[in-house]
Length: 392
Image 1 (spheres, rainbow, N blue to C red):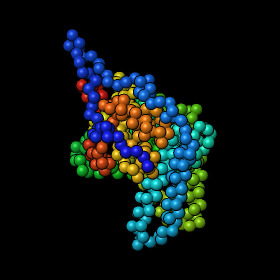
Image 2: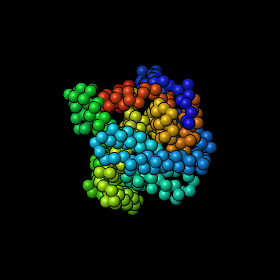
Image 3: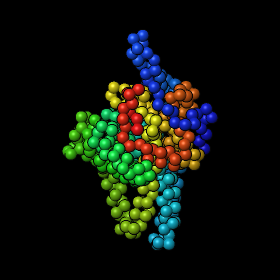
Image 4: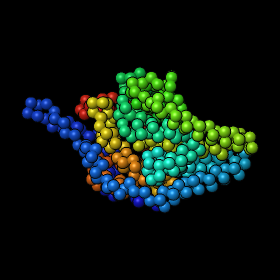
């Protein structure tokens, strides 16, 4: 079982940090940037944190895959009747929650944080993500961009909010004002937790401004290559096709299963947990990088350190931390050094919080309350004249 959150961790989301805090003799503000350099931030995490422990790595994989197979096996025995509707709902929640652990292991493979043998690691990640209908190599590329430009309005990737001066930002803020917090929050939850992942894969929803719109994880030619810089360069086409082939094989396997049983059986056994997996994926990523006090930066203000330290650790509890390998409770450490395996990220989180207690974010708000706060209050971002950053 994973360690509990240290007692000294912050119990609320860190408030905005004023970057212009003192004045020169002429009355002009002088930058008093509290953020460490990239070298300083990386330096507080010892190199032994990136060492692999094969038993822990393979044990985590075996646990997630084993529990997932067991859960999916139960689904093949549930009757396809209306009387079993409640049972199907319970099955979907449990199976999707368990299978999310496989998603996280594939995520570690994409960061070279699972095994020292890169070829073996790639095979594990590709297989797991293909089974979950994730285009592995394309996702590895876009996710690397996300890590390299976290909370960067122009160069960021995933959960990049619109500026209030943009067309989408004006539309979002208008809807927010007209619909009110309850209806706007409800629609936002549906949009992010149900539709967000497929919209991101197919159209690049919530991608950075520089990559244009739309972008696609399945093709990097027209009409998707229209930004100032390419999210997926032309040289990436071969890996993108490999990702697509993995998905095609999985889709054919599902079609074959439907022919052997029924389409309804496949939809219930595979499709229902798939929606729950996507729910957890969107919940984690949304809550890791979004809240009312988290700044986003444009080119003038952004730095790698600033971006990495806007990530938020949250209290998912011992069960979810066990099943999902602590992905939501050690995410700040993951952004500081993404090659640290999940079983070492707890120690890394402890070190970061001790070294930078005022910068490492932890929000103790219960997950459902944090979700509603973000859904109902976060629309477009506007520039704060004090520090130049953008806030909801």
